Image 1 (cartoon, rainbow, N blue to C red):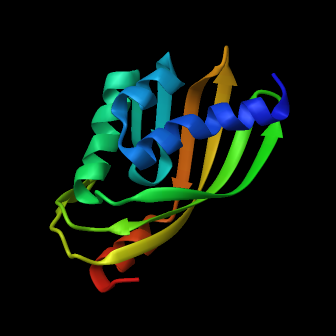
Image 2: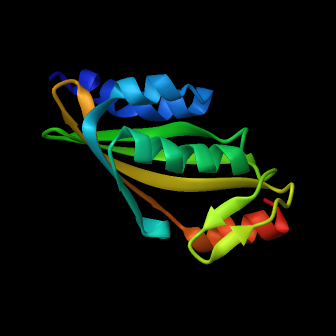
Length: 141
């Protein structure tokens, strides 16, 4: 695949999340898609489990969106540097329990490593700083 096609394929699930278009997320990923959210220790396999995780984020942070800062390609892997922004208006399920809505805005830099195969995202590892997120949710950006 050409470099730009790999980048576009890697961005597709995130762009669909931005619109909260769940069927577009499903269409952008491989059937056995593996999602590894390193900061929360959450690892899912398959579209249903990914959607369950992402919809939970969307309930807590309904206006959350990612903007893309940089993209790097190595083989069939794409690294995306992104910034998440949004407002905490719903209960957020975290490994230590539920975080009640604070109404605070957040801005969080993250890195995604996406494996692309056969024109779809096959796997994604997402790295972000949980301490920064929790501080912003508690105190505001």
